[in-house]
Length: 185
Image (tube, rainbow, N blue to C red; front, side):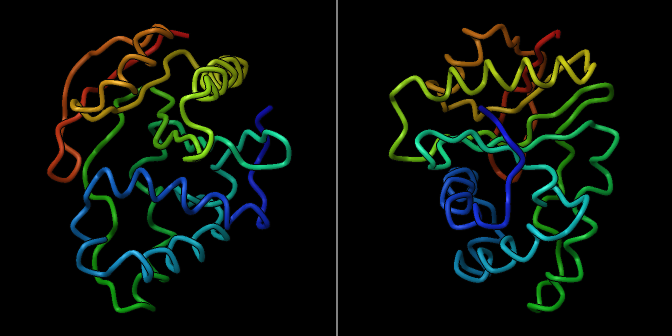
């Protein structure tokens, strides 16, 4: 069952979140390095209203271990969602934002990040967690849920298709092409 992330979850959230960052091959991670970026993201957990602030991260636990993480927000927050992190980035001598591409479309609740802990993959955890997350987002009164999936990530696309998400377009995030998918809630 999903719950809001807590500070003590950080050591379990970071490796799962970094699975996504590694797949995205973002230039800033190549330039700065994963260790320094992990410090930045960890400090960002404490920032209210930041994309990866604990107030935006939901975790699904199995036997006391974080099995799934989900990060999302309404599209209207996207333009300012990374602003709180800039002070931390500057502290580490980083002048640019991590994300510069527009990822969500108007009127959507955007699932920015969804990942299953490496040791929990292949056990149906992702399907069960995403079904529960859809119920949570629907219960908040949202009408459309969206996400972006790398065009080469067939297992994830299969899951999203199975749960009713439909491809409505494509966009680049960094150097990778993504299918933009929506689910009518």
